[in-house]
Length: 215
Ligand code: CA
Image (cartoon, rainbow, N blue to C red):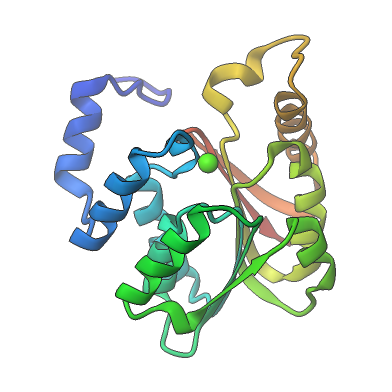
């Protein structure tokens, strides 16, 4: 027994997936196809996708926003958890992988719920207004602090911003990182701790997932 978060070795992680992952054959196929790409590391872990879907249902979210969509795995998980009148706006830059995302959304019958906007996310976010219920952020890390500000502007009170990769494979521990990405994640993490605008939890799921509830 321990009072700290457990380290998952390979066998315990396999067990976690074995007893809890309910990945559909379509999601599994999308994950396998994405694994063949040189940028496969951009894909969320399957248990993260399932957790995001649970968050959508727990919060009763109807209006979703995703910043960083890649081949569409997390978007597919969240869109499937929406009620029939729910919607998801996805932000990504143009790339070969956009077509993969759309192809799987169509195959799932969920493409009508998803509005993919191909432009630098900061441009798309600046054009958005209104009240989103949940925003998932998994894009260029150097802009994470800016994405937080947009998220707090766009979320309703009680809405949830979710940031991926906030443990950054442990590189958040570096004292003088060369990488602007690492510095931005460190800055976000430190700033969030004292940010009175949000309730906060950093979960060690996947590469670290930070939940911020707008107060
Ligand atoms: Ca990620």
